[in-house]
Image (cartoon, rainbow, N blue to C red; front, side, top):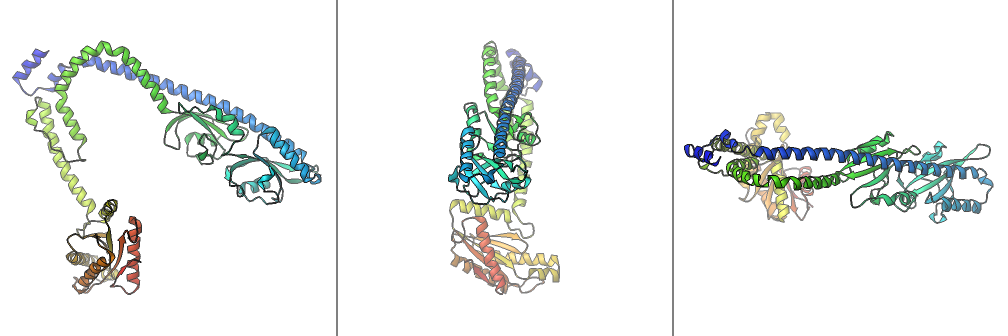
Length: 529
């Protein structure tokens, strides 16, 4: 093979691609092994993904059944104790308080238990240290529960008194005669130790990144290993959207941190909540990498000797094409100087290099033209607002103090209405010529929009900027504009960092000063306060 290539190279310094590829037939073996590895990778990936999704669903379903039983017990406890309070009006407050304390301590279902009269007045609360006894409920959830007169479960909300994030379950209290007396509610403190954290905190798997969380019927987190997220609305999550519709299943999702996860989710019949068990996709990738490493370890030795010779040959033959690919990838991003195509031994590389050179030249011309058009105002030839903001950001980043002069042509609408828009354009061009002629070499003028212009004065304090602004104002006033005759301008000046430390604030200060100049009679230059 080497002799054939040497003989062909001697007859023609420009080898054809067909001749070149003839010497690389051995790469078919490597390509075949790569295809096998890829097929194994995809097959293993699909298997791991399906297995993880199925296991997550099984875990979510198991947890949802646990929670379903828990909430059935919680509702039963509330219902039983609400029945015992049918004669609450005849019971002493101390007796009621003891009953609530016993209910809270015996079941550990709730962090606090409250009796609210039908009027909204808190009659009793356990623990008494909450200090809400004798106060009226203010939350919309509590008022809704009172108004419904049915068993109720709230969405997460902050209490007005203790500023805790809570949910509560309530049961109506009816007298022996069936009169509605109020409600008995049990509260769960979501960001503190509660019945949910006691049951579910022991299953988070930190080393693999797998975890689970619980959402209410509206998509708010009621349990999460990161307590700072509890109460957050995650209804945009696809799995949570299925839970809101009381569906169960599994699917790939993306969590609030933008991490791709495999989720199994299951709805809880007792309260309309849902459990989501998630595992990071990255964990599967780690397992796949280990799987591929084992395969490569077994298959690499038989191909090592063969590949060594092939790689040496390929590197020699593909060097110009690698270079051209690199040049193409950098087109439009940086200035490129291409190598001389005459030194290539391949006819195809020679032709491709010349073609890329021509394409590169055309792209550079178009890029320069587009860059100029994007940063320049067509009518006046000044740089536009985009260029202004870019320059201001650069100056602010480098800590350069500077002043901004915002200039507006007085009564320009009257010029347009009287002489037409073509005449108005000529007036703007005239103003630009006068302004530019009045500036110092280091000053820059931009068209801000319409008849408004902005001038940047580098390393210029407000007093100096006022002097420059007045020079511009007098020059415009004493010039003769086409069609319009005498023109005047109003100007507002702001200084960085004296008046503002950011782009928006600086331009707003200059605009306020301009407005003051306009409102106080026009043909004035005003420095921002």
